[in-house]
Length: 288
Image (cartoon, rainbow, N blue to C red; front, side):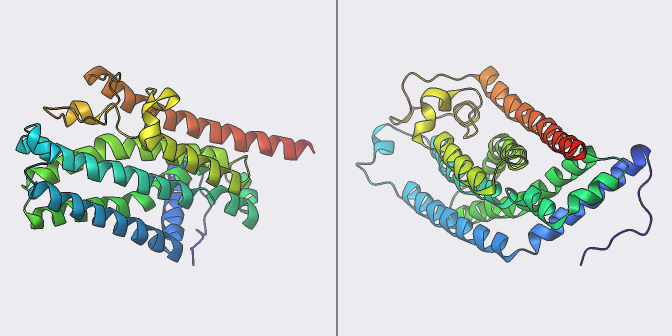
């Protein structure tokens, strides 16, 4: 049961902070009490762990005819390849999960009549949108981080060096955090004015497009790409590039940082659009 404060938050910065903090706590509590969240994360985590174990075992015991042996991959190259394998699958699974778990939050509040209570709050929709975004993001970020750490620890147990843990956490910060921020922000915005099923299907297909091989072509190869396409080759380079990499694709430190900045900017813009969407709907309802 969520406890409602006996004193309504006042105006000003302190009141806005109180409303944001209360919304964050409520969203985290509601997400973590959903059995569907833990079942979904367990399935995604199981798949990621199996893929990580398979890759870690294979790369530790390469057969003589392996392409990595023939192309003289160094131990550092293999470390980076492990980071890439775990990171790309983690981005596909958990970015997909993040979107699905957040997509119903705005609709749920509308169905339960929470919007009417929100209108009575002195700070209006701005604190509501920020608190809902941060609460849902933290609720899904913590389990994801734990799974990434578990994958790294299993790799260490199998014989990989400690540096793999550091590199995997670096990839988590540089790739997963910006992409998942954009995913949550865009999902909240789209769900504020589109039907639930439309957002679930369309966003899921778009996310798979960006995070699979198709994402290396056309719009998928734009600077918006959330799969780490621009980041991995810069921060986790391979001495001998993989043959599956799109041959005409090029990146650099500047493009990698720009890619991260674009994803963060997308998150901010999505929050403003969510606020504008809710405010516009409120204005139309008041005029009706």
